[in-house]
Length: 143
Image (cartoon, rainbow, N blue to C red; front, side, top):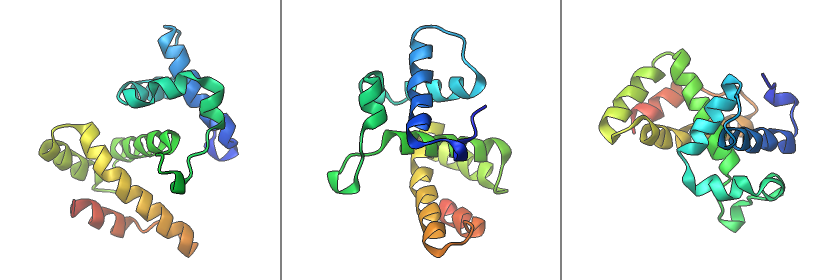
């Protein structure tokens, strides 16, 4: 299983591109690759970009360009799914279940949660502190 903090941006992006390529080729996937491929399958808007392997790996997704970074988006989905699966922070699985029920699907609930997770991570980076789990859950419960 890859260790994300030891990977360069290119290596991490290649992991996504390769998981999608292997999935499309019907190859056996490691558990993380299967999670990534399933998630990419839920985002058809990213398929063509990810199939242009080197262009996807080299692409810049600058805020001023207005393009959403698909790797960030998919990574945040994976983070939310891991949080829900482990119920960490405690209570997030219940929040996810409630949002899923109210918004029609787990995937739609995750899309709502992604923005909050991104904001909490951004705040933690700016302050140099660990993310505030209490504030995170409070913001999620307010959705």
